Length: 526
Image 1: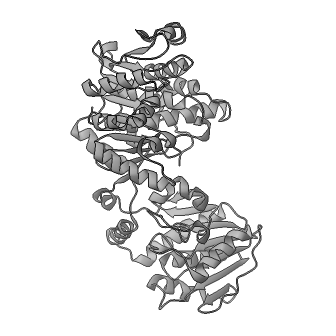
Image 2 (image 1 turned 180 degrees about the vertical axis):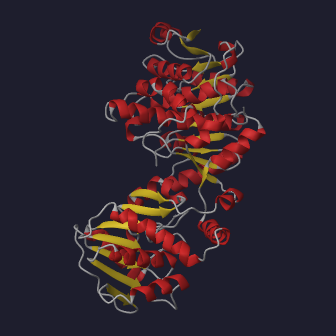
Image 3 (image 1 turned 30 degrees about the vertical axis):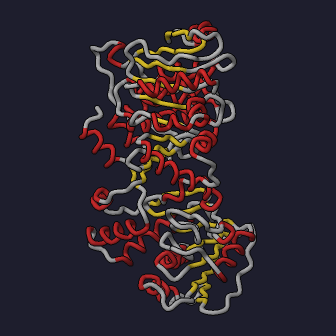
């Protein structure tokens, strides 16, 4: 495990997130490989859109289609024609042909529409009198796709606002008009279409994974268009989506003739007076995730708490009664975790500094370990190579400066992971694991019930367990995040999101691992 072959397999099996330019290349390759022309691929896309709309709305539903001059508009025109042929007669279609010309495929679809006398079709070249829209209507937005490079302005921005303010249910094709597929700094969201549902084609866009855009995108669904897989494999990407098929090849089933030492020993520096629960949850998760041994080093007053709550864990008392003052490693361990509940006292920061100067063991820093570093920033320069940092957004901003958007924060995480040669697990709805290479792995598991005290301590334990078992740090982080989220999904399925606690997440980690290995059903798939 962890050899070159495993790494290569992991890259191939992870869903790549491509730029708009790369997607165009993939579409061209698909046409060539399948011996079809672009209009046939467009029709395939329109069929998928048509059936998705039919699955959600009855034929009597009023649907207003707003199409632009490019191929995305062509998809909308074709989908409207297909809906009409299937009995959806309460359709109004507007094609905006205000530029020099329509794309070839959009023009072909326009020609098909104008031959149908009964269909309500308007081609807009100059003045536009928008149709009345209400909350009872459906709007299909296909003004512009992900190829848009500039923000919407003028009449198009006004049209986006009109649709948003109408209360109609908006379905955007490819991507909401005005939103770009990748980065959207300095764009005004009021001038973008705010979709309730985004139907995107085959592969998600980077912008879908950033919290800033959640209200623009709404629910999103991938429509499988059978793009050429060989071409997809051949194009590299710095952004990936981690799924079960990404993690399964990396997991090692347990062998019959093994003992606890074969699964590694982890030492966890966690807890202080009033915060011993953090050490309990971290230790429990470490053991639930397969580590052979786990030792908690904490204030000596915490011994009874830890040994009662997690009797399987060993306890190493600090000389201090209430907090940690010593992080020397006295025994052979395969992983070191520092941070949950340790506080930020000067003596604790001194102990962390000494550890960073001397640690030769795979290392994870979380919670108060990161807050300690933010109080003494010079410690960043002492981080051992491939140290895993697991900040939530508040801890991240304390470390690397205030950021106002998720996009800014992700860009900074990429920069800092490269600069310090570390792995940054930026926690959130789509937790982003950023490697020193600059590659980013977005997680696909997890749910709002995991927004609960101690969930981060459990994640620390899960990742630490994989480090202890000898997984490479970049794999341990990516796998740990996915399995932690899946454990949360299993807990939510059984208990409900509102009733979940961090201990529930830890208790479901073993089942999550088993489901992945046995190819069981994954709850809440994207």
